Image 1: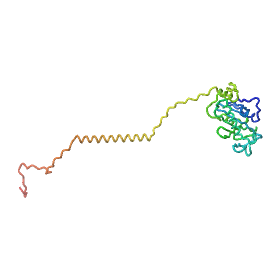
Image 2: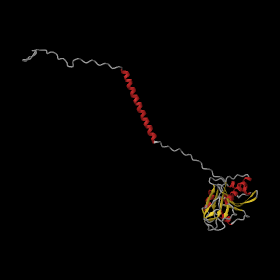
Image 3: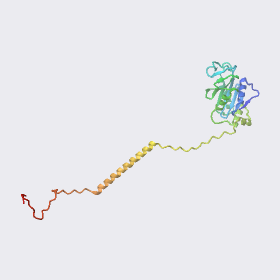
Image 4: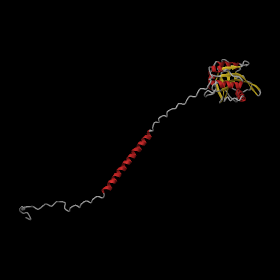
Length: 289
């Protein structure tokens, strides 16, 4: 990361540690440390303003008066704590670090407004720098969207690097040309292009990936619907067949007409035998002979 510090700057111990930590990061970015901007009340000192390809971060750097290790508790209503005791921070008595960074963000925004430059959304962060050998966890606490508390030191810069690379999610928005214009609007000067290129900034924004046209997936037919369709088809064929048979029968009856009455049966069911042709032989005691 490219770090710019004014030769006349008088950095505190925590700020010097922070500068060393930033210079060790391989992330793409520009940090202007101990920035002095003009306000209606005079000159205001800002801990740092950091540009990354995704956004701008306004930072207030705060150190510790003594070595403290433990779990960090951040609150907007009571003093911050490290472990079981109050955090012994290098701030004015009664000062609130969150209000300090909110004020710094407003001053930077007003400076951009006076220069008629729109930087987009500005994020803020309080960077706590413990003394060497102290361990403070967690390394990041979110006060509200766009305002965080981060622990950063040279011994453990990983968490600070992750935060700087992700505090403004989304596609890249800051090219080296836009960074030059923004720093010129804020400070009146701009880094050289070769420095920003070496820091990782691109001259143009990358083209968004083209949306690939996907073929619509073939929908598998519903087996239940298929079975219902087959059943209705069979029923329709059967009904048509019955209607055809009934039509054929009706046509046959109309063509044949009324049925003929049957002939009356004869009175005798046995045939009459013809009389004998010759004389009849008589037997003794045979009547009628």
